[in-house]
Image (tube, rainbow, N blue to C red; front, side):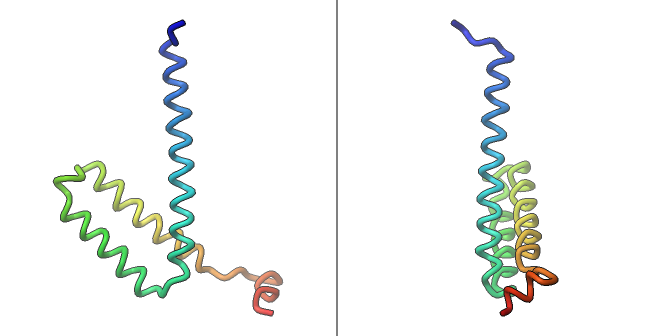
Length: 96
């Protein structure tokens, strides 16, 4: 039995949401791993990757380049978040 257009659209939406969830997982994993490295090294690495993306502009295409740079900025923000020490009693327990 042929699938309706609305069923196919629903399947595409589900696939897109699963893909987005997977991207968030990789994003968080990378950020937490990088948060363990020295800040200067991480900043240099991200700057180098953005410069490299600029060199590949013609191959990536404008939309991919924007997405790439946005993701790099987002990972940088997530690294800062991961580096923040917890406050209060929990932080004291971690230090003990």
